[in-house]
Amino acid sequence: MAGAVDLSGLKARAEARPPAGAQGGAAAPAGPPAGGAAPGGAPVTVIDVTEAGFQADVIERSMTVPVVVDLWAEWCQPCKQLSPVLEKLAAEGRGAWVLAKIDVDANPRISQAFQVQSIPMVVVVAGGQPVTSFQGAQPEPQLREWIGQLLDALREQMPGIAEAEARAGAEPGAEPVEEPEDPRFVAAEEALEQGDYAGAAAAYEQILASEPNNAEAQAALAQVKFLERAESADPSAIARADAAPDDVDAQIAAADAQIAAQDVTGAFDRLVQTVARTSGDERDRARTHLVELFELFGTEDERVTTARRALARALY
Image (cartoon, rainbow, N blue to C red; front, side, top):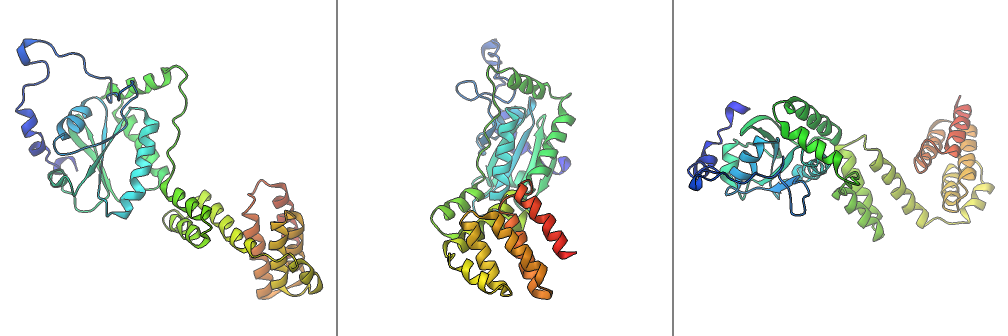
């Protein structure tokens, strides 16, 4: 990738200016610490870059710390998944690397220089040269690992990385950076607050479509589906189910009503007993519903642990 990207066109006008410290023969004042600093001394972690500022914001800044260039566009949906994760990781990095966000539609010369064919595209610039890149949205664990490997590989050549890391650890009363909220979860939570269960469920399902193992989204989706059922739960369903023990639909409705009434153990026991006395498809329906109810409480809940053991005995 490094050999394929020509940044000379973007640097030409800036290189025509006298270098810092050359005017009048006087030495320039010392520059900002590695990664630069925002007003108030906070480290710069995320910047929006234009063609006019590319030389200073990317090329010159990359002489002290790596600059991770995020090439995006407003219409690009994968970009909207990737950018918030990169911003979160950059904030956690506290200046050891800088995220430079570039709108390719507003800055076509930069897009041409990087030979962008599809977005999102991420290019790392270090020492004024691109060193590695990737295309497409990536899950946070892989991005976190990638950033760690990048810093490890460049730390000796770029002392600014270690300086920023040391400065972050030495700040008086330094606390972990608060993680920015994931906009996908924010949208789902807003829909839920408005009582739009279908919208909230769709938002969580969209997260799971790209991140099938996202435990937070899995648990939230289970909660939303139950809340939608619970809102229309009929307390008399318990009495009807007691009168018709072989009616699986009645037992499922009664279990939901018991959960809504905070009788968690009673709901679990009801469905375990239903599994024990049924077979075939009806047993599968009762078991599946019981497992979905387990997801509302988490694997460490003692009531879930007890019910899981009882379910295993009922099945085998």
